[in-house]
Image 1 (cartoon, rainbow, N blue to C red):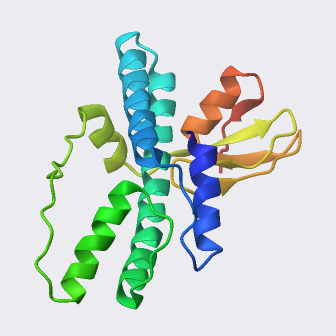
Image 2 (spheres, rainbow, N blue to C red; image 1 turned 45 degrees about the vertical axis):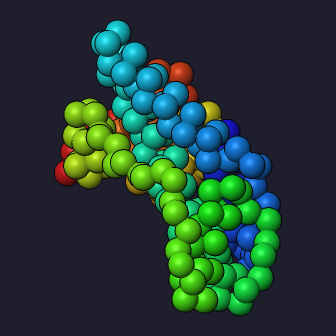
Length: 188
């Protein structure tokens, strides 16, 4: 599971009125991805790798945003299926939700929900990152690059060698480290 797969799943959900089939352990895999990104960001911070930490936090924000959109779309479809009384391919978590909605519609006794969802606390670094607007700077792109998804969920690029681009600082610094771009200052 990675951001590319999440983006593909979001595109599939957007392009279809039906529920797309997911692996049974989809939500578990997503939770693992989030934990891995948080651990990587924490590890980077402990090593003093500020840029690397921000990259992991940006990836975390993107993954969470993509997942929220996927869940929102799937929830709408699950409610529609429950209203129509139709069953489709769903994960175990989604089937439990479907059964609760279906019981509510039929005015039956609602099934017990075994697990209570506890809101997760955000680390200080994550909260700080989310509270700020995405800073951008000017860069000269030195190699051809495909489009990239920024921490603000906007697509930047594609870029050709020699292009000047105003992109999120997080992306720009990563490109500078890889000698794929150089930062420029614009004086007006």
